[in-house]
Image: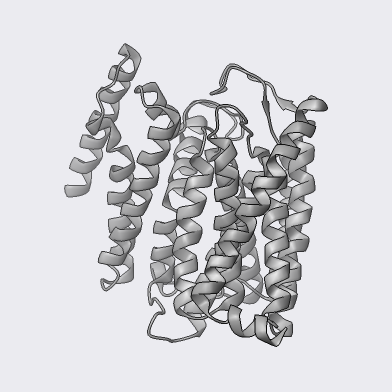
Length: 385
């Protein structure tokens, strides 16, 4: 055991094992899950707004959760984590199990938004209250500094709910939620690696392995599987935990690698799910619809309407997310509120840039492109005075 501990404290070997283990588990599990789902006819039925035309196995989130959890628990035991870190590990697994049951029921039977929110709040409170991982400071953003305890808990719950449901909303085309998840967790994981936070390192890179294993089948034409609500909510929860832990660490610890403007960096890292969710909610409310009614108004749907394939749309949005993160690094020495204004102005332009780069193929897409460009010009004119 001591020999294994010595090996795994080599951070690069730890990262390699954390990624490889869930990938290998996934390669064995998903064929079994696909077979069971098909044999029991637990398939995703295509509807009018669906991006697929044939019944497709769902519950891919189950495979992600199993491969992630087994890797996390095994490496956590071998590393000899402190009692505080072990409590965090157990709370993450317990909350993930809660969300997994919620997601499976939603995939198979459907659930009312109110019930989903109640269970999501319960899962969030498990880790916030039991481990005291919460957003305690706003770093002076918009003049806000330290938050009172109950305000801190309430805001942290809101962040969990927002990101869990944001990832649920962006899971609309093959590979998108998984690819964005890898970009986000790889960015947070690199930060934790530099700061030698071993629990967060194995959480981050085990999630990468679980997502790589899933994408191997999600992007397949012969043995395709969807992650379903169970998978998207699980990813959103783990990424929300990483983001809140990232904010908490930067507010309380000073190292050569801490970031003085952590909220701006976190928003840039999570820019795509945040922007897409806000945009879709605004559009639905403007159309006098419920913000929770599904439609085809997401950014990825607009890219498909322009003629891009699922893989090209996913790759495009992944590259833009990386550019948004790079932008946050470039401006990190500016005044924090100025960074916020720049992010709010530039990041939407980045995500809408495909309308400028790709030639639309249909008349509907061409008209939509003209309206988008006119809106962008008007907003830019107003911003510049």
